Image 1 (cartoon, rainbow, N blue to C red):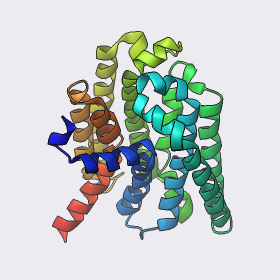
Image 2 (cartoon, rainbow, N blue to C red):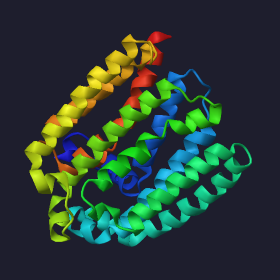
Image 3 (cartoon, helix red, strand yellow):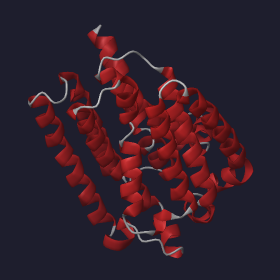
Length: 282
């Protein structure tokens, strides 16, 4: 089925990017790019790359600690993890330490912020926080959602606009994380991990996600109307539409395409939107 959309070679490359967590790390660092764009700040490869490396480290560690569940939920990823993930983890660990040392001498606040989020990410995987109902979803949403703060700390811009972005992305990450719980239902049940889909069912879980996304429409428009967010943040409305699309498509397309490419690629979609807007505008 996938070959009707992509060539086999292209799909193999995409699978490598997805299973190695490079794809999701690009998505996470895309939030930094968007924040820089929104505040008309220069492109800063240092903070973009350190967020990329941070994501790579946290997710590769998580793949190692979640091996038992992944063998049931995503056997292809589990096979990749068994063969190569430890190398990616070691590489990302050393790279993250190297970048942290650089940041330490440039901006201590950013160093502290990244260090704390990395520690939280490590604790999440090692302490198996995912076994605590809803705490996993809330923690992941907050840790990911505060990503714009790295820009605020670097450029000393801490204001309501930045807080609005943090709220927006935190709620979107909550949706993202909850949707992945649907994919992992089988393994989570076997390992007695309580999640929203396991507790209230897939239908009710999706209703909650739809309601959050509808709230974000009003949240975004009201913030733009009252001048708390610049007019060009209207681009986030199309991002919300993208989330509505993947909520609707759940269980309608192939799992690896849906979760690995579509949901994990939502913030890459945001970056593509920025490129298109800039291309059309200028």
